[in-house]
Amino acid sequence: MKGIFRHVFFFGIMVGLIVLVGQMQSWNLALSILNLCLISSIMALGVNMQWGYAGLFNVGVMGFAALGGLAAMLISMPPVHEALAVGGKGVFFGLLILVATIAVCVFLYRKIAFPPLRMLLVIVVSIVGYFLLRSVLDPATVAIEKVNPAATGYLGGFGLPIILSWPVGGILAGAAAWLVGKITLGLRTDYLAIATLGISEIIVAVLKHEDWLTRGVKNVTGLPRPVPYEVNLQKADWFLELAARFGMDPVTFSSIFVKLCYGLLFAVVLLIVLYLSEKALRSPWGRMMRAIRDNEVSASAMGKNIKARHLQVFILGSIVVGIAGAMLTTLDGQLTPTAYQPLRFTFLIWVMVIVGGSGNNWGAVLGGFVIWFFWIEAEPLGLWLMDVLTSGLDTDSALRLHLLESAAHMRLMTMGLILLLTLRFSPRGLLPERR
Image (cartoon, helix red, strand yellow):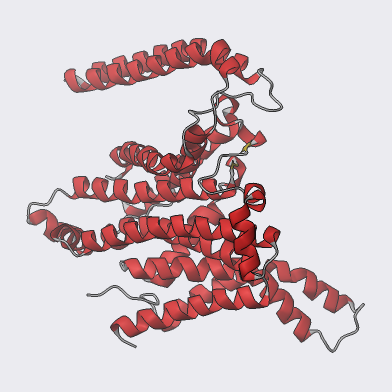
């Protein structure tokens, strides 16, 4: 299969599989899978920018997605006025001390030419700034966390529409990527992977343990929605008439309607990101990035600033991941720091890019759909397969019971099998990059 026919074939199969789930299981489940596939595709596009365009091996996807989730909480949740009263000033002055310490260290590093003196002064300023920061911040955070810890115990947010958090999540992730890139992009590929993984774990650790900011492992629940609530829909006359017209129960139809609204929003964002990604890839900038990826020495000889271009694409990819992270938290309706596991936000996203086709934006989208669909459906498919294989055994057979219980572990085997088959029969992915 060549060109457009290959794209239509694979995307047609994915549409058919989602429709099949709707017919065989439920439309609620099918739309839930669709929404998560859309978000996963956006995240895969971000990673594809970094790896497919420039060959940057970023294993810190989880940290940038977590920053997007943090933005969703900070933008949408209302402020906790009592917590602000007892500890808001302390947090504000603590942040000022942090910024001032960093500014002084940067100034000393740039202005003092004698290396031993420069390093000594930077270390002294850093230590003094750290103890000043803790002396101001610690009493404030303790006071904040004592304010109704069962329900709040944190500062809250700005109480704005949660959809505004999507670009803010991208900005937070982009700012973090700038800092990370300044430190790590001069490293070799394997060291870059280790560094980005470590920094992402630091970000997640902060979210888990700084209760005054995110409530930590107690989670922040009840984030506002950008779409209607099912209960409100079930009370609206226009919606009841619409449900009657389709011959559906209002409760079931309200859940389907909400998921369709989410799907429309996510599809719009995906199309915008995909359009901009395609324009960038086909532009002179995109050709330059691929030239740097294929041969850094030759590109450098042509006068290209390799590190600056790497930093640029690293920030752009991280912005897209941050937007997807904010969208995912919006869909979940809560910020759960413990949910940011490498398996979900690093391994799966990388498998999406590899299976779909590294360097091909449409391939990244396809990989997002394929991998997330089978990640969700692997367990019921495994249960059906084990049931068929053991249909000839007694219902109380120990082997049959063991195999049925093991069906829940089919996910990892399914991911490995998909990756193995793809690398064997289509090493450049289902939709390879066009040369």
